[in-house]
Image (spheres, protein in one colour):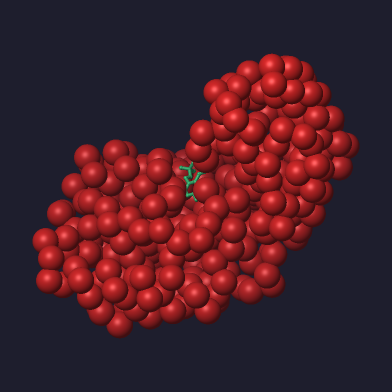
Length: 334
Ligand SMILES: Cc1ncc(COP(=O)(O)O)c(C=O)c1O
């Protein structure tokens, strides 16, 4: 990847004449079955652009309560874009089509004008859960049937596809705009894209510039993304296998709660037994052994993510470190 970056041909992407960015945008659009795509610095910016080009100030976004777009991006959506939320529940990040339909019907009569439906696949807060395709398609049908656009936050869409064998374009067909990241499982240092129609991507360029996301000789970074797309997608099932193994081992550790059957991709979220405030000491004890978990997903919960820099030996190290921390921190003051 570093060599590809060093060798990249570059231009000025603000003038849309960086050949490596153009190639990445074409390949990404083709992967997602869309007319065009736009390279952006981060997944957040890709999502904000999706919202910005398809909704109006004051519109509400119908989404799951635990969407990344709400949990992390609320300041951008409400303060910078002036949109609001209509969050609903659903099993591990997945909304039921009937719930979407009833909210949309009620919103016609109420003050909360819904301008877009947003879905995530895979779902970060949902333990890396995958939206079953028929459910995703039905949610989209409820939105589109009422003339509303759908934005898919596909930060880890590559993982959903690797796990199910369903092409990214098949998932993306349920959405008008799709955001994908090169910087997560694919291992690129920076970069995401938003895809949609050609006209939508022209608008997207304007909003990207507004957010300060216009980039110059950025082919060096696009080359890393191209390398990740070509060489690192095929290995995503390894991450999923390791996450399952990690989850099964962690589930057997006294003091930690986790249902390993929930692990579908590369994210493992678990919860320590109460009192939950020991989570900080627990995460610190694991980190002291060189294994990084994050306190994430609620009180007493932590997240581990498998990725291309973690091999089988690394997983065993992680399991051993978590076991020791559980014994010392979680069991000590029972
Ligand atoms: C589901 C989801 N969407 C969007 C993002 C934002 O991506 P970035 O960190 O590149 O802005 C993330 C980051 O973790 C994510 O998990």
